[in-house]
Image 1 (tube, one colour):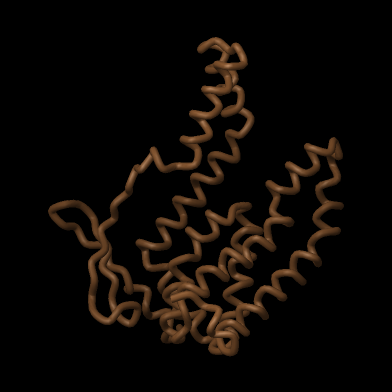
Image 2 (cartoon, rainbow, N blue to C red; image 1 turned 135 degrees about the horizontal axis):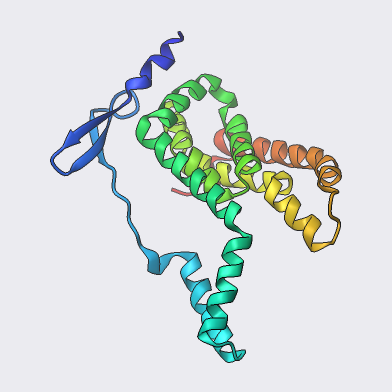
Length: 227
């Protein structure tokens, strides 16, 4: 077993009077630091809340009855049911990897990439979006990893967090959800594989270009980094 993976105890789950907390240990942090496992349900600031309110107001102006709005909402939920389950599962995995210490362990492992990490860290964001179909989900999954690895290597956490999102955008064109939406919107059913084969190498090429730019920003164009 490699020494870096002996850090599997980076986060220990303790049972306190207020519930379970996580304890971050060196070398991730300078000294043991407890981190409360708190879920903030700030529903008023959620993007979906604004969309729901706008849909209700629009439905009223369009002459929909409350029952008609409820039926339309129910049909929409049924159509996207699998997507909702998938997104919820991905967000849950992101929280699990954070509090179990998995992202910290992976971050220390990726630190062995050395000077090449800005490039591969960008491709990590590309991979996250390609797998999950969401830049937000990719940031939830790998945001902690990017922060820990960049701190271990003396890089800017702001830069690598942005690189995770920028690289992720290049993976959007090959994620399954986007391809299905594209084939459905154009009535080109059953050609998802053809679309994927056409855009796959474009996606990789663009992600590599972003990775090269991030590498330059990390070591040469450091004045472009905010903070």
